[in-house]
Length: 225
Image (tube, rainbow, N blue to C red; front, top):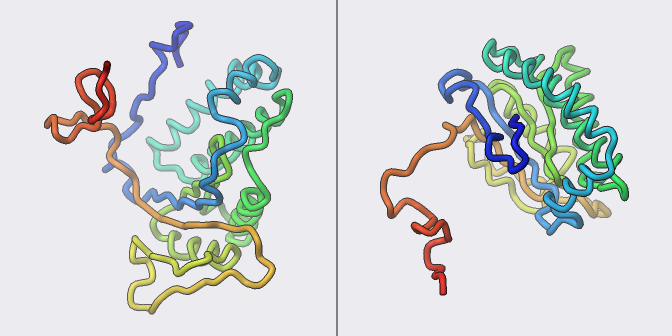
């Protein structure tokens, strides 16, 4: 975290390379792709102005959690990583509720996913999955590679898709088509589920043709008049 008012000294730093923890996977649950009622920028501006909880979070919570989760990543301590991830997600949305007027980023399906993951961890006797949400209803669930198929199956059971699961990671290869089908009366659920491994972080593009921006920093094809 930086200290300059313009934010120029606040930027992300990669904790470890992709090769450090290849077992780490993320399962993305697209609950809604509709435009949010409150944009992230407008919401954060209002939160800064009205939420007393945000100031406590900035001063006392975030610095310690950054240390805890960095240590967990470096030591490949999944249970600590998962605990910090979920607790921080919970507090982020508590801050959204503490904003005046309150901001509701999560919906009923989002909260139901939290309950399913919480119960899954309880029945497993240890934390094997971690949910997290940013400024929206869509869930990201972190787990280790060995648990991905089990968790995807669980999600498809409780949140059936309106169409056939595409299985891009080939979790169910050789088991036939995974058809879920929304049951009668089931009006809201998960629109899409995808699982992926850890990415390789930011990269500098070497060829001009690979860039999406021109020399002026605008999308290619857009001219400045």
